[in-house]
Image 1: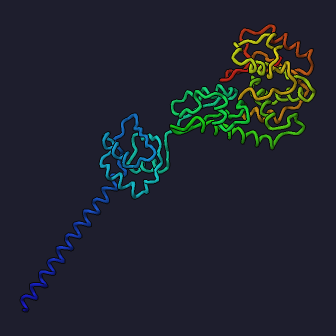
Image 2: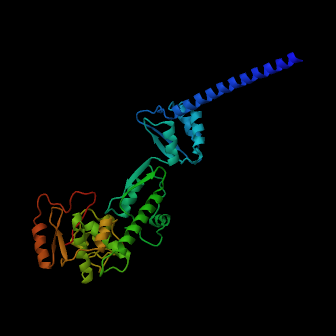
Image 3: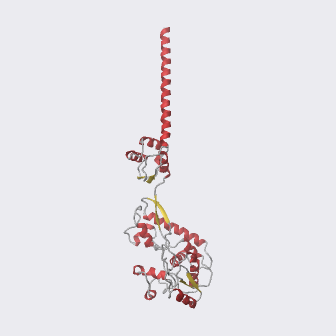
Length: 362
């Protein structure tokens, strides 16, 4: 009996030692695997010099990207990427188009996905453009989804939430960044909200004794200033001329409104006949402001409309170097016209080089 007991004790001790050794080996393997896992997380992926672009579509998981990276030879051990993703709550990753550059690691890749750092594209809406020009620029972007293309004006207004207003002037000129597959409607709604914000803020801080009843009238004036300004520093002076004309009951007599009213009939020049033609926008014929803006005004033109310069000038004419000559009387103005318009210099220009065209007030 004693010998049997000793045998059992000896066997038990050997089993314990074996279990202990197995545990040590297992722990060693686990530690080694953990060290390799952390080492692997910080190793650069095999990304080509031009970078690697992948669009993670709505409903896709990190597993889709891991499998594609593995198939393309960019990533070793796709399973490890899925494991790391689970540890980092990668079910919260954002869909979108991603670019991974040389030097990216599995860790930085997952971080980018969790932050939603998708590729952003840009569209620029230029100050002084019309709504039609802005719509054309937006329509040419291959990265937007186009819902407005082919729609008539009324359908466009419904999509943009502008059923009760003319869209002209209501989109803020700026450069807008967006991810692929953003809709043109969403982008223009963003531009519209920015214009509303800029106009409301400027209206709240406006100068006193202005001839506008509503912010919309100030927006109309700002659009005229935008199209008339040759030199940016003259915005407030030009605003002062137009404000004084309205206050004194004079017609604005500004060529850009005539051109806007002509629409597609305008071919680069306006004649005396055009100045006499009755349209809703011809400020040589109508009193006060035209019914809508004639362009998309910048923040600077909105500020000028609401903070016109003091003075007594009622006229201005382009001098040919991008600046204007301001006059208080018609006789002074006529003399300036003879000096700068009837004998134009060889290098005459009505404005400094810019992406927008400008015109002059006679």
